[in-house]
Length: 128
Image 1 (cartoon, rainbow, N blue to C red):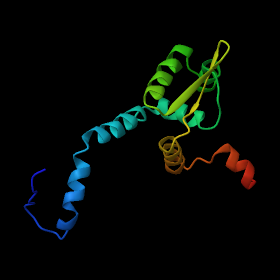
Image 2 (image 1 turned 30 degrees about the vertical axis):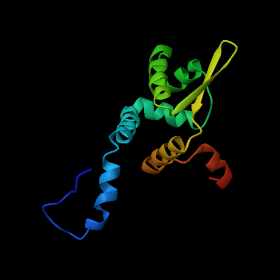
Image 3 (image 1 turned 90 degrees about the vertical axis):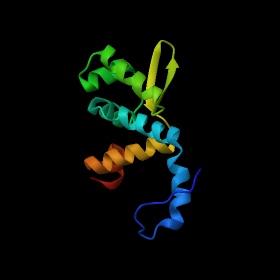
């Protein structure tokens, strides 16, 4: 990495090497952009939020979302590829839920804070 000289000096020069090292990790920023691209679709956000609260099969997700099973499956594939959800098979049924990762939990919290939605479990615990 070559020395970086900024045209304007505002006192942050001591941070430049560390900031520059992080900015050069373009692959990590691409991963973040890919996750947010998945959540750029309101239907996927709704499905992801639902899967943070229960573990339904495609047919039940379709009923709750008032969508066709193929349309739901399309969104589930995208969410699964991004690592936000996981699935498990039980006989012929496949069940989906949010991944148990810090990223999925953070996105869940972000959705709820932005939308000011309360988790159903929290309502029960807080007597709301």
